[in-house]
Length: 357
Image (cartoon, rainbow, N blue to C red; front, side):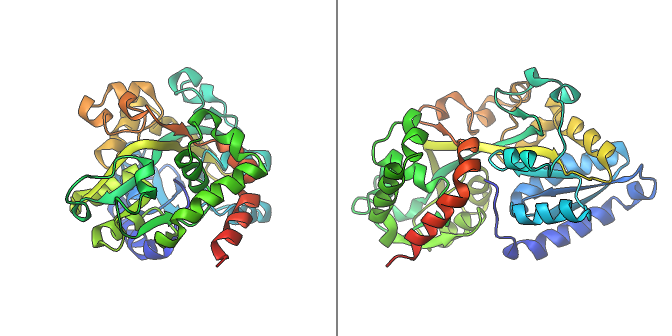
């Protein structure tokens, strides 16, 4: 969920950040230091600002500044290696965190400082990070384009006869290769075993060959699918559940389904060389307290990987989250370790396939 084309959002988000800083000017005047939190922009970061950043700044009397990134590891490397570190808390995908940790780009963190491993769902603590958000990659569609039967399965995305019209997909291999193999009949528990072979990659690309002529837009960020569906430029698109839900609030023709959802998430990390490490630790403690973490669903339907947070939410809200039992029947977990090892190589192969006429 965590790579965005920021060009469409930078002006809006910059204005929002300026407004946030001005709104907390009285807090800043008496601030006990400052803190820069870097996230992924758009409605996601706006939700974090309202649910966590602003309340933390007010309660802890810390001046909170914000920045955005698109998951560019080169930018993080350059910042740390040059010693010119301007970020403190970093939202980083669970797929990129192991690499950043291995390269010494982020601090090592003891889960005991944040309530211990037992406070988090299994797999959502790491030697260099603490679970922040779980989100899903799903299939969204424009309801008005299908007056009769509605698409409801991943295979419907490939069925251009039954559900005609242009599609959109993310312009990268992650999720696309998994969706292709699942649509070709690979069971979720064998997904990465197959994808880890040359034959498996070839099989995925061959399946994508079937849909490629109908993919009108290859998106650069997760904000685009909602707009494309709202405008009717495409009839179906891969997207994140939270952003599609936000888009649907102003464009109710946007729907999505949970069949074959792939869920993963973002972690809180502290950039190596942070000049405000104490406040960074203080913020992560604050943001991972169950009652505080639970507030995110008031603004976007991404779930903190904290079971006690889910217990504080209304059942009808939990039902719309990736980890709701009824949404997990055909789900698969995006393998962050796999993508940490293979993303660069598979990106080259995917782009070569994409450029092939």
